[in-house]
Image 1 (tube, helix red, strand yellow):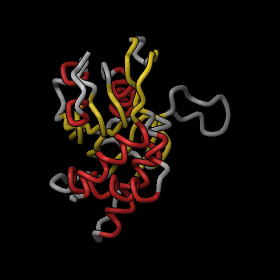
Image 2 (image 1 turned 90 degrees about the vertical axis):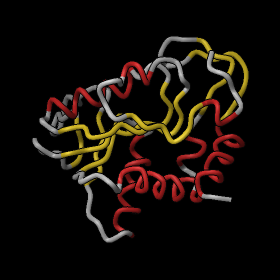
Image 3 (image 1 turned 180 degrees about the horizontal axis):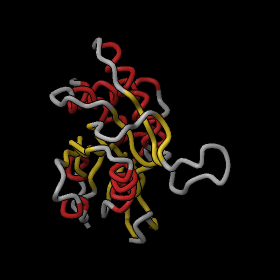
Amino acid sequence: MTPRERLRDLYATRALRFGDFLLASGKRSSYYINSKLVLFHSEAISLLGDLLYEATSDLKIQGIGGLEIGAIPMAAAACISYHRAGQSIEGFFVRKAAKDHGSKELVEGVLNAGDHVVVIDDVLTTGGSVLQAIQAVEQKGAIVDRVICVVDRLQGAREALARYDFRPLFTIEDFGIRPQ
């Protein structure tokens, strides 16, 4: 079994649930993917870090990250895989709202104007959450070279991200589910 196949199996058994769910996009769905049940599992996060490295190693990027909370363990896993490969990279995350104390930054981590980055997210429906992260990153002056999600629900994210190099690791069809 390949690392990709194993990660798909872990998502299918640990994260995929069926029922009636309200998604962050506001849409209702007969299934839900709770990535946190996978992202905090030792084998799964190691596999994901390696797959994110593989999906980005062709780029000359300085950073990888995305919107809290899902992108935080993903970015950390990618950073570890980059380090194992002998390459340096910065992880970052974007807050949903800036804190009213401390640095008051929306983007946490080392992210400089002119940096080339990959923006990541766990599950995308319409792409609204990843676009929020992209906007914050671009406002800092960074350049988004690629957008990667673990699972694309095939409900508009690709179209919303048409101006970016968007590459999901999986689509919902990889789990035997037709888009709704």
